[in-house]
Length: 62
Image 1: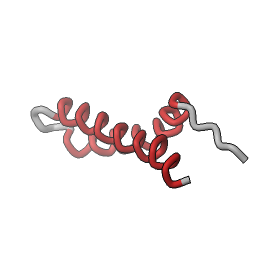
Image 2 (image 1 turned 180 degrees about the vertical axis):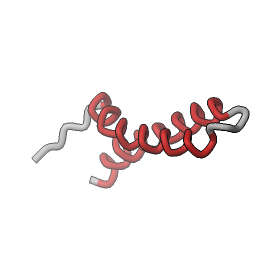
Image 3 (image 1 turned 60 degrees about the horizontal axis):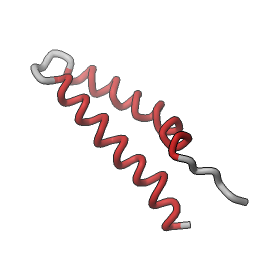
Image 4 (image 1 turned 180 degrees about the horizontal axis):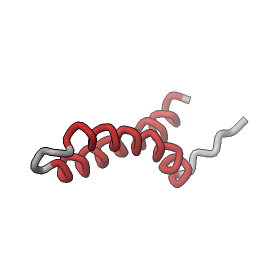
């Protein structure tokens, strides 16, 4: 059985998890200066590692 791991599907599959993490992080840092910068950087880092794990490591480990 072949899994379909297109880039778009990987990104959409990770979106709910990333959004929940972002909302909880926003609640923690909402009153601090530079919170938006922190959240944008966190979003990019989370998506980068999630994408690496789901797209590349899954192909290597398979």
